[in-house]
Length: 126
Image 1 (tube, rainbow, N blue to C red):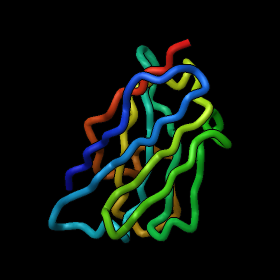
Image 2: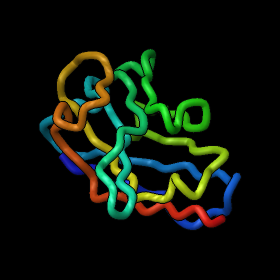
Image 3: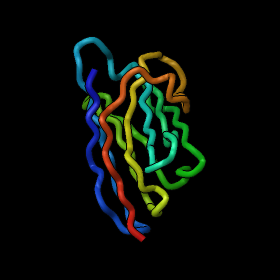
Image 4: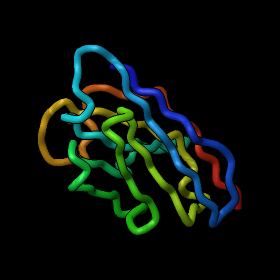
């Protein structure tokens, strides 16, 4: 399974970005996988941002991004998105998408995810 993130970049405080993560591979079913977004700021531990169930009916968010970020997915395109609004300098980080092959509720735990992308850098200037 390959996960490729895109959409990162430089944005001013209060601005918006939409990240995408495209999944590919022969031995998995994207539409039966939980998808998550995590982030890691320089010098800090990895932090959970958001996750979405296989159907998209259930989502969960980390406390620092709740009410500002929205996760969604398009199973026909094997793609998950992270819409980020009202960005703050503290949102600056490398953002990673991850795939959990288990057909269950979306998880906030990184250890539950089986595959990870290479990450895309988001920089929010003050």
